[in-house]
Length: 304
Image (cartoon, rainbow, N blue to C red; front, side, top):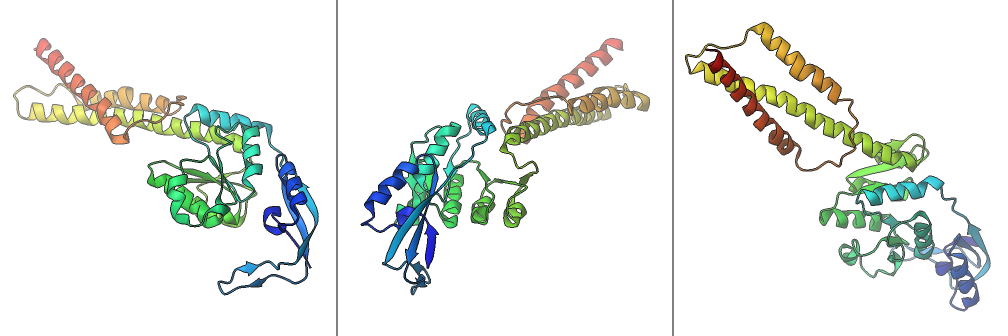
């Protein structure tokens, strides 16, 4: 029988010369080993399959990852936005680290082999320390995302396979491709229909535009609510006549709320979202509303 898998797992210790070839090729290729075994692997008491001791390497299979030219631009965009990029993969950490180098990931040398962990309890300690994680199991991916969130990070996870589903569900925002597995598309918050991560910066910019413009529009509506309420209370408990007629309020609503809010909804805005949504609105709306009330009262008194 024959078995295909990771060289560092399949190759026996006495095949050190092949292991040295593997390390040489792993710098530029994803390397698999085809080995011949006398019998098929059998499950042990823990239902884990144990490789037979007698196995012999037949050949190394080299797979080349085609890196899109746009990948570096996407990584550079997120670096400029202050986003920490980490790579969590099931492949050899040396291979993944070199791919990270090619696309411009900061700290690509800072790699860790998750298969060397004796216990998953230390994942909380290494989640922030390392940038590249190789030989990662699906459960370890989930635990890494969970650890980063516990430390206060907002985490977006990209993945396209069944082995990424647990981590995608654990993240704050999960992104996948249209050509990904059904399981990945089902749990993803965002599906890239063109299967290109080059569009992710555009998605971020569009999200910022929507939220920032909603904040501005909401501030306008809240300003109207504040000054209308304050004026109603003031004129209700004073002898000063109310200065507006219904037609005036209609014109004020159209000119100060309707048209401006419509135009603001389409205004380009790529600024980073800052602060609490409600606090940001109140911070702008309350002073403006009070200013409008003072102006109306001053004009009313001056005209009297």
